Amino acid sequence: MKKNIYVTQPVLPDFDDFTALLKDLWESKQLTNNGKFHQELESEMARFLGVPHLSLFANGTVALIVGLQALRITGEVITTPYSFVATTHSLHWNGIRPVFCDIREEDCNINPEKIEALITPKTTAILPVHVYGNPCDTKKIQEIADTYGLKVIYDAAHAFGVEQGGASILNSGDIAVLSFHATKTFNTFEGGAIVTKDAKLKKRIDFLKNFGFADEVTVVAPGINGKMSEVSAIMGLLQLGIFEENRLKRQKVAAQYDEAFKGTEGIRLLDNRPDVKGNYSYYPVFIDENLFGKGRDDVYHALRREGIFARRYFYPLISRFPTYRGLDSAAPDKLPVATKVADEVLCLPIYDQLQPEDIRRIIRIVKGA
Image (tube, rainbow, N blue to C red; front, side, top):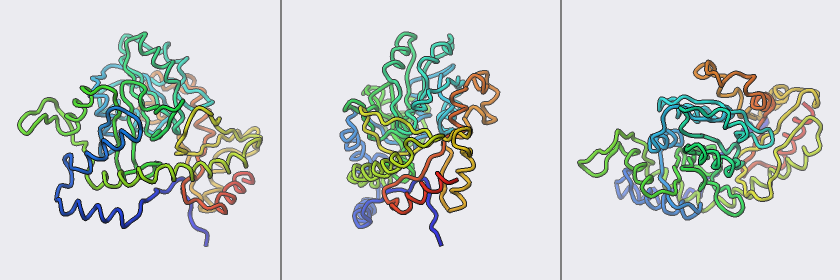
């Protein structure tokens, strides 16, 4: 019987190391509320990533919601329809109107050349996504934001450890928001973080994630309960020690796919950018039915029949969901590239323990679907 293969599997630290720290936690009896493991992970992660300030959260979605609150974003925000729904849901929960901007086919990120035409007097910010960990054109986006007095919030859910030109991409914008969900290259079971360069903003974020408490008797804002638990922080500390090994193993899987699919008519790959140190969170291929002979969904179902659960990240577009499809900016004819990419994308399994024979089987099924 063939085993099932999923898009990703969490990399796990040594169980004895985890239980030793868990015993320490158990004996301390402080399971949450800025305990010693939470404090240690915040400082160690900031150092590891090369960022000045970082605030840990229970998950990336709450981090996005709080980040928008901390920056006092209102009105309209220009964002991408090609992402996980949490990106736009965070706007909705803050009473902010999303305005969808088309993407670039070469990297699946928001197209900076399309942003300015969408700016109105109600626009207060831009919310781009580093899709699949590919850096956005941060320089151009910042130039636009500076010209129009806008904030920039990066959804960096896929971008843990990603560097461009030798520096962390998380230092771009006013804040960058990470996710540490169990499916991510770096995970804390569930978790997230906000990165900022501003010490005062970091302090406000920390108030907001803890009900607005400034001290035991003072509430300075209508905050939320967004704190990371000590158990998740323990997982994060151990994950830091194995992240680079995991990243390199995923890179080897990606290289095998690259070699197999390059030059295959009808299958497009994202470019490997020499200035970018990626984390290989996902491995997307884009299938052109007219050239390949079969469509993306044909390949998707062929893999599923063999117990290989590839994913159509991101299909359908956020703009096609009932909550958002009534927006003027959600019309498919205004998002031609995003619509095309969503109809062609298929993310193949990629994780540290994916075996060579399984990689070969996946390649064989995709090519022969």
